[in-house]
Structure formats: C-alpha cells, structure tokens
Image (tube, rainbow, N blue to C red; front, side, top):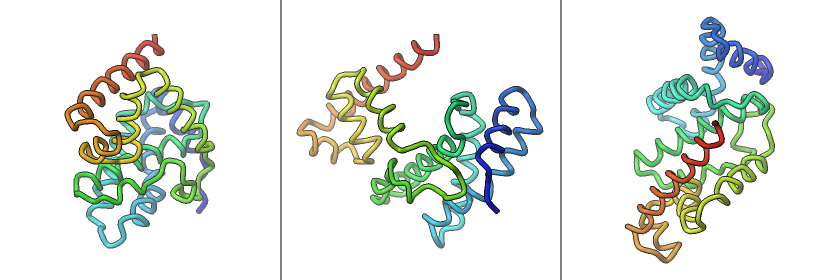
Length: 183
C-alpha cells in the first residue's frame, strides 16, 4: 500500500487543530512505514525495532508543534526517525551511526514524497551561519557526522573539554536564535 503524504499531512494538521481522533489515526497510520524503516536497518533486532518505533511515535506526539505545514510531512517524520536510530546506535556503542546520512535519498522510504535534501542542508547552513565558526564545526562533527567527543576533538585539533564547551554554547546560541524567531 502506498502511503500518501498529503493524507498524513492532513491528519497531522487536524490533530494540531485539536482533533484527537485524527491524531490517533495519524499515529496508527505511521506504524507500518516506521516499522519497515527500522526493520531495514536493524534486521534481526526486533526488540530494538519496537523500542525505536515507540520512541519515534512519542517524539512525533511531543514535537508535533514543530511541524512546518509548508513542508512535506514525510520528511519531518523520517528526520525524527533517523535521529532516534542514531541515538540508538550511540546508546549501544555502534559506530555505524555516522553512516546514517541526512542527505542520502536511498535512506528514505519510497512511500513518501520528500523535500530535497538540499533544503535540510541549507537550513543547517543558515542556522550554523548564525553562530561562531568553532561552535558550528563542533555541532556538525558531533551531531551531524556522529563523531564522539574524542573523535571530534582529534578532527578539529582542539581538546575534548573545548568540544564539550563549544557544543554547549552552540546549542544555547541555536536555542536563543530559534526562540527569538518564534517571537
């Protein structure tokens, strides 16, 4: 069955408008594509698949207000799913997390129409352009490329404590920028 991004988007918007039944229908409709997404990446680890499925649905519910209706719903959804997958790899000490590329269209399920990866890249470039270069480099290395603190320090030629401080300051600066843009 081909999942329709427009239908899911409509359910999301109805849920955001207060329709609890639409929100519940959305979460139910997300089960098959998300389960397939995680199964393709975690073959043989069904417990992890189900855990990630639940974590992603919770994140969709908790972060629903961050959805931008002008963008495809599937792109937003699978960005959350990818981050949950990367978090799972990190928790379990798997280094393959850095191979879950944000701009690899093959990583995205065919069931949805997606915004171009360049949109995400340009959004990141714009956000990172508003903070000091060192903070942006640290956030790219640790949060986008999935490097550990030690790996990022080695790549950037700075100390591990400097990586931690720069990441903290970078997140704070980004949060301030986002908060200011919502006012």
